[in-house]
Structure formats: structure tokens, C-alpha cells
Image (cartoon, rainbow, N blue to C red; front, side, top):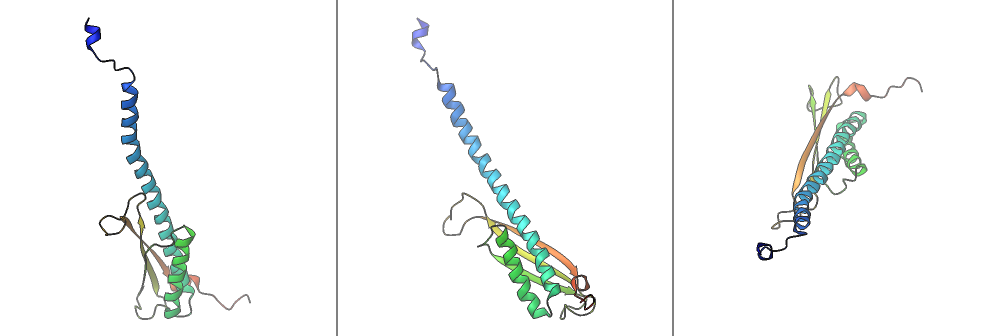
Length: 151
């Protein structure tokens, strides 16, 4: 008699496992995708900083060096699929801060950017959530200078 009073719950365990799986799997999937996106951005930013420092060091003067560093950094990011990301390139030199191509200057290039986190919409008109990235590369000016020998 007691058997007839209880509801038949066969199959409800499967439904619970599916729902629990979805509830746990979707955030885990988002975390994995976000980590991959940030890693791609980090790889692109570090490559952009190295390339920008080399381009600046090979330029004939500081003005051309700034232009080349920005162009090369943008291209290095584009090579990683980061086309429409914000980009900030800052160049500092020591011990000659006003003339980076003089003497034994050491050039430091800082490249800053951000990657948008995947699957998150623009909330309240504030823009998509992003993860800020930056990288630095330091190059002594004589390291990449061309010489007239061997021509």
C-alpha cells in the first residue's frame, strides 16, 4: 500500500545530472575561453614590445623611431588576431632622455593594450569587460645598429 503513495521518480536523477552539468560546465567553459583569450593577448603584447624596441633602435632618429615603433607594435598585435584593440606605446631612454639615439642609450618600450573577455555583452553602455595587458622591452642602442662593414 505504501508503494502506491510515493511518486514514481524514475529518470529524475538523469535530469538533475544534466542540469547540474550545465550549471557547472558553462562557467568552466567561459573561464577556459577567457584564459585562452588573455594568453593570446599576452603573447601578442610581449611580441609587440620586443618588435617595437627593435624598430625604434634601428630608426635613424627619435621621430622616425616613434612612428616605426607604433606601426610595428600594431602589426605584431594584428599577427595574433588582435586588430581592434587599444594600443599605447611609450618610449623612454636613459641616460639621455631627450636623444635616444645618442651614445650608449638604453631604450625601454612599454606597450599597453587590453583584450575583451569573450561572451560578455556591453553592460549598461560601459563597453565590454576587458583585461588590461602591458609589456616592456629594453634594448641598448648599439645592439641593432647597422655598420658599413661587409658591403
